[in-house]
Image (tube, rainbow, N blue to C red; front, side):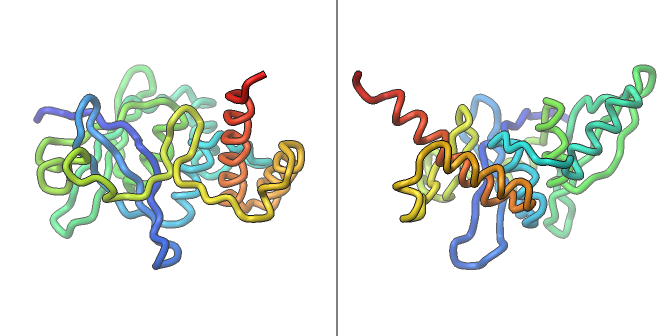
Length: 204
């Protein structure tokens, strides 16, 4: 079966129903995208990595990546498939240098791990046909916090953030990370990046 490589585009969030997130994957070199519903902890884990939020202690997927590295194991690839009941699942191809073992996984965990070790993510043509949509034909279908050179799209600054300096925002981001409020830390990281980019574009 032909494998199609996927790229992580970002995280979507439901502004009406709290706690509902989806990770969006797009075929490499194409326009078809697959949204996969994930839980809040997995959304945090993925977004922390996308926004390069440094946590005081390793998250679960960081811990797993560290364990694999310590024992000389490497994640060769992730394959995402869909079961008959409509749930997305994944398999991890893990190598010890001599043998490759295929391990069943939730798709959210597989994605969170793959982006930490730079492992490729694949799916099949059938999954794309059945579950994907063409982003070029359906503009505005998702509201994304996108991976785009460290920036996050559609981040809404709070009114109080407008008057804060970079130093204040960085201190608040660190405080949020220490309190393990990673969603807030990721939001502040995005605001910091946006402020830095705006400052760099100002004429001298």
